[in-house]
Image (cartoon, rainbow, N blue to C red; front, top):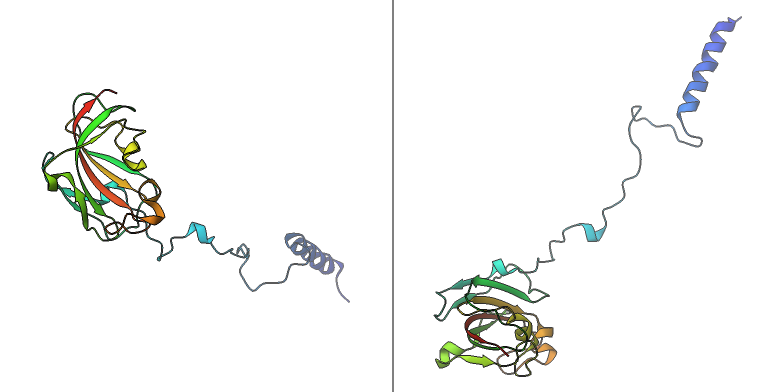
Length: 194
């Protein structure tokens, strides 16, 4: 015959264990306190995909040469073309900054992002280029209208223009292909009020 105290102790132990386990939970061989919550796979947007390149920033481009002299532009090869207009002053200028409607006289050098090839430049012709009505000029691409605002005399500016602010899907044959990103170095020569 069993003693009543042994039965009560066994029942009490069973009740305590039952209270610790939610209904329907399977028994586990894992030690108590082990978290058995399934781990969700990381969202694809939250992980770095080795195939996705980072987009270039202004700091990724190298420009050699002093302001006022023809620059040499090196396009990075380890990042993707920027999707937005990049404007970076490499040398701060002096005097009045170009406002919308002003006339700006500049020297410039242009290479393509895709291959770093030289396309055009005013130093090659040994003459400056003048842009009237900056910000709204019909004689230049939208990237210049936006990118020349704020330039001052003696400023050397890096301007990287995405296709939608440049020549877009049609390009500008033969030198500029479709959807080409344009890389300019622009030296401010003078700014005249509009």
